[in-house]
Image 1 (cartoon, rainbow, N blue to C red):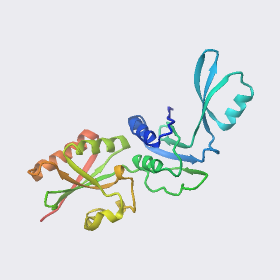
Image 2: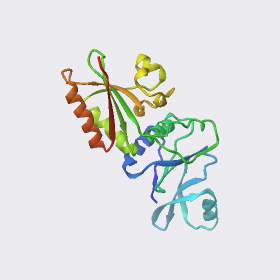
Image 3: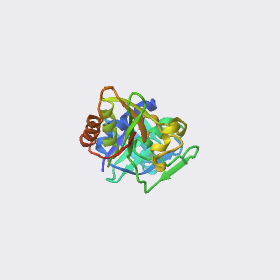
Image 4: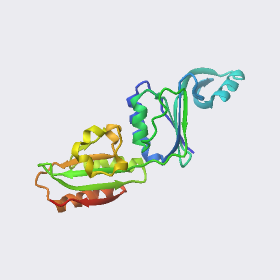
Length: 241
């Protein structure tokens, strides 16, 4: 088991940190959220002689340690957002239930069906099954729909890599809310359409190749190569005109 802990007063930096460790964690199976006053997850920086060390405690362990310690407490941090993956790795963060970055992190990790935690002092979700789907509706410069690429990935890091690859070839437009689909909503499976998703991690997207002269065959080859390089699978649905 590894513990990844990151504390920052800037919630955007916390979100960026989670992105940076995606290759080192697998699928998230549970998460906890706590108000800062009630969280049992504490890190302290202790000074003993001339050395400093980071120590992670549960609240009870921390209180017991402080009663019988001659060490000097340099700093105390409280973590409010804890995630655990299926390899028993833990991620300790300090975003709150009211921050948009908390929702962004969950969506980044493929957890998009849980919104019940808001305004709760303590919340725990278990037995999670993340989904790392990435659907891309490819169109031409005249907005004719050419095909739908339906990517599936085993882990969040691979999905993020696919997004980075495909953006090298053109313009990706996420459908972050149900309202934004317009008539395009008919091209996507109903099960993939949500009222709202984090913009950067939206399941469904439209895409326009930067090269306006791109032919269908080359476009399909690029999409298949994106899937191959990012470690995912892709199914193609062609549209007739």
